[in-house]
Amino acid sequence: MKVIPIIVPLYKSYHCLERFIKSLELEKTQPFVVFFLDNEFKPLGDGRPFVEQQIMDICEKYGFNLLKYVVLVSKNNNLYSESVNMLVDEATRTCEFDRFVILNPDCYALKENWLSDMVACWDSIKRNFDKKICTLGSLQWGNEEKTQVWHMGCMWKPEDQKCHILDWQHVHHIPENLVYTGGGVGFHKVDGNTGTGIMIDYQKFAEMEGFDSKQFPHYSSDAFFTQETQYKGYTHYCCTVEFFHQAGNSVKN
Image 1 (cartoon, one colour):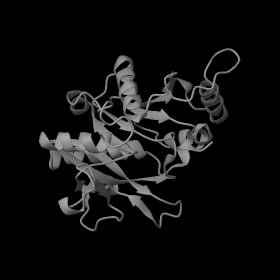
Image 2: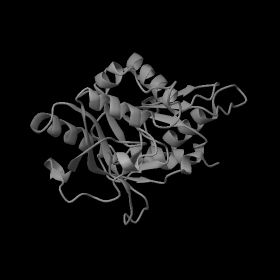
Image 3: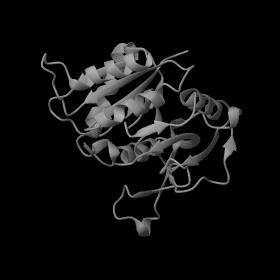
Image 4: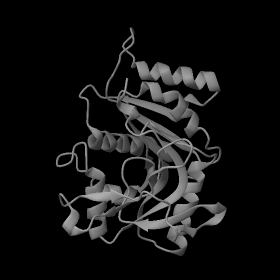
C-alpha cells in the first residue's frame, strides 16, 4: 500500500494544529505522511521553528507517531501556489506515491478512515467509470452541525455570468444524482475542486509542472490547473468524505 502525502501550507495557523492533527489521525489504515510549510517561521531560542516543537508536543500528548510529520521552513513567506509546489517536490524526495492530498489546517476530517475512503472512491471511479480522473474533492461542511454545505466541488459559471475567464462557483448542496461506491461513499462529476481536502493525481500534476505560481501566486491556481487539465481530457470528481471547513480560520492569530 503506497503512502499518501498530505500537503499543508501553514499560515498563522498554529492555533489550529492540535485539532487538525487529531482529525488526520482518525485515519487508521492508509499510510500517510504530512508535509507542512511554515511560512511565518517563529523561531525558538535554539533556532528551531516553533511549529516543530508544537507538533512534537501534540504527538507526545496523544501518542501519535512524530515521524509522520515533516516541517519545512520558508523565510521568504512563499504564497500558496509555490508552497504547494515546494511541498510536493519535497514529498517526491521522501516517498513513492501516485497521488497526494492538499489540506488547509482549518479543515478537519470528521470520520474514521477518511483517507482510506477517498482512496477507495478514487479507485472505484478509475476502475469502473473513468480512467482519466485527475482530482477528487470532498464534502466540505460550513458548520459543525452539518446543516450548511460550504461546497462539494465547483462548476464553471455560464459565460455571461463570468467576471473573468477562471470564474466558477461552489456546489452548495449535496447533489441528488450521487453514484455510490463501496462503504457508502458517493461521488459526482464536477468541473473542478478548489481550496482544501483535494486528492490530486501526481503524474498529471507533474505533467502540468505543478500550480502556476507566477501567473497565479496565491489565488486561482487550482482553477487554472483544472481548466488546463480539462483541455487535456482529464476529469474531476467530488465525493461525500466529510470535513468541517472553518473557512478563513487558518489566517487568524
